[in-house]
Amino acid sequence: MSLARRLAVISSAVWLIIGIAFTFLILDSGLEGLASSSGERTRSVLAGIILPGYLISFALIWWTYKGRRAGEIDERDRKVERRATEIATIVVLLTVFLVCIALYDAYVDRGAVPVGWLYIMAYGTIIWVSLLHPMLRLAVDFFGSVDG
Amino acid sequence: MAKATIHNRIRSLREAAGLTQTDLAKHCGCTRQTIIMLEQERYVPSLSLAFAIAHAFSARIDDVFQSE
Image 1 (spheres, one colour):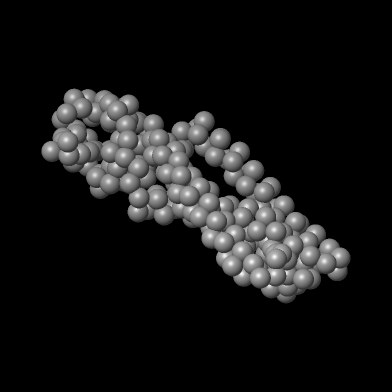
Image 2 (cartoon, each protein chain N blue to C red; image 1 turned 90 degrees about the horizontal axis):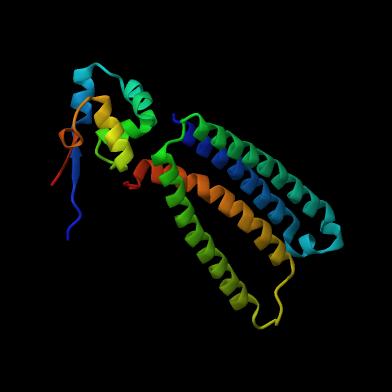
């Protein structure tokens, strides 16, 4: 397996685990619980879950930089990365748009959106883009066209 | 103008030269994965990589790559 693929697999696995843990914690605490003062522990755990994800991501970025210097990441890998970034940008923008519209539809009669949703959207977007990008790198690497 | 399809003879030239994919990749400054994609004609290289590949076989670039 090439270095680029290996890094994408590791990144996908890490953020998938974080995403699953995040989902379980949100479902366990609920929206009201998340926003209340009793949700402080849950919010701290959520922030704590994401922190190792970022430390690992920074380590992978450093590993990628070293790989480029050593020639283990070549022109095709860079094109795959660029294509994955393009697709991820569009997908994440669409996701945020659709979630906002769905929340508006769900709460328009109440006149306000529960504040817990802002927390979920903030951390959820970070997790979603961090998971989506390496998975797209693998998909583009296997199936996509990145001709020079 | 329709986009040209690029074919290559990398695999046959590599086997004739007795090189492995890894050898060729190291010689050209790319990864083995890129060589695999090139041989399957699933990737069209940049001009600099195309020249590096032709140079690895001591061949002209149009002896390695053909367009139709």
